[in-house]
Length: 311
Image (cartoon, rainbow, N blue to C red; front, side, top):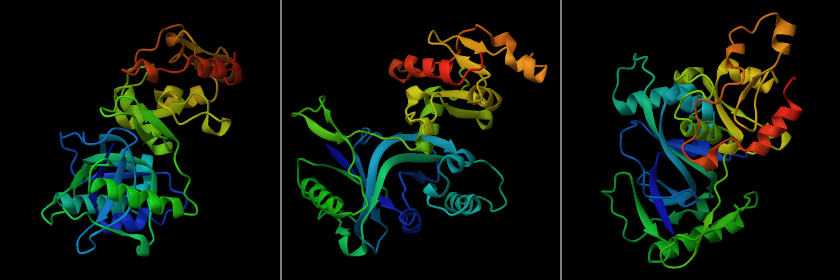
């Protein structure tokens, strides 16, 4: 298994480490360049190394996904979990690091490394950087947990995790694709913000019903709501234009297990309108995630048909 030690802004760390019950973080970079973060696979650890002169590892999380987002969407999805206390504060940090004009109103695209189940150590438990760490490293360095110094580093991290009183150890899974035997990885668990971004990217940033591509108009909808025990999982999500999202949540629109759109007759009965929506009646979904395992689960669609849809 690999782990990555990423150089972390100390102010970002100070903010996220004091958010009560935090379940996810956005480890962002001021430019959303074309380079993908290919070092880790989902479920592998990403550790936070503070900026020099604090040459210590002070916490970490588990990698879920790397993507590029407009700062407005990053803020809407993660709020203070971006490591800033307000959108204006986050924007000012990005403008400064991109060396843009302070008066710029652009919705900059930033690089986002999404991490789940973050953890933070007390100052007395911070871990010195590995012996091969070089001051010239600009972004980070990866290690393996089967070779030194990565092996000892990961053991020290696990010892500290076991002592954190409020930290729930993550569910684990076996990686059968490991080259030298099976390895135990964390089973990724999505938070609300990561759910939104994972669904947005899975649907190619287009509405599943209308094919609308205007990102500010799109929202990730749960098929079975989280407060009804629906999971934060891509196969429990649909990317919908905001008006369709509201109609879906309130039962005036549903998707059948055959992936056909159903528009309730009650939309017309109750509001004497609906002509913008009835042309979609009986039509198939336009957009699906690339991976079939991320397609809407038929059992969850049946739940929505039977418990939410106003027939």
